[in-house]
Length: 133
Image 1 (cartoon, rainbow, N blue to C red):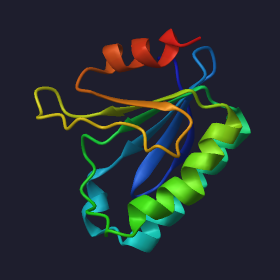
Image 2 (tube, one colour):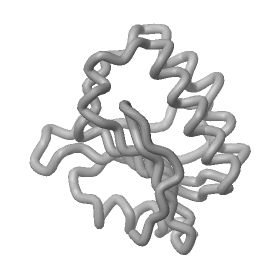
Image 3 (cartoon, helix red, strand yellow):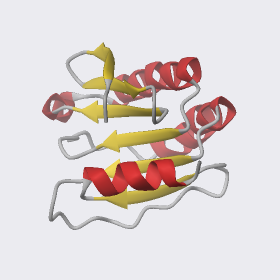
Image 4 (tube, rainbow, N blue to C red):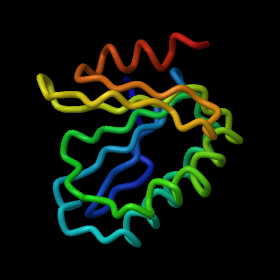
């Protein structure tokens, strides 16, 4: 991916590939100290970038993600973030885990209007993200 950096802070950076129309969020080790409110703020900021760029695919690198979201975060994310992704034109979302990791199966919630898959190889994730268009 040929990317431009759109955002960088203590917890994450946002990368954009104009040609592939893939936006990435690369979580950092510092997320171990993140609160649920900081996580929600980060996702809200990221959703703004998704909307601005009208991304078709989202690559979520969780290989260094350490935050343990509370039980109310997932329903909040589906209600407040996923609909923004879909409205922006997102068709696919890929989660990238460390190479060789036990990759948990993840699927889109019934309310989400885009496909979700998990990978431990960035090239396979990028190929899958662009396969739909």
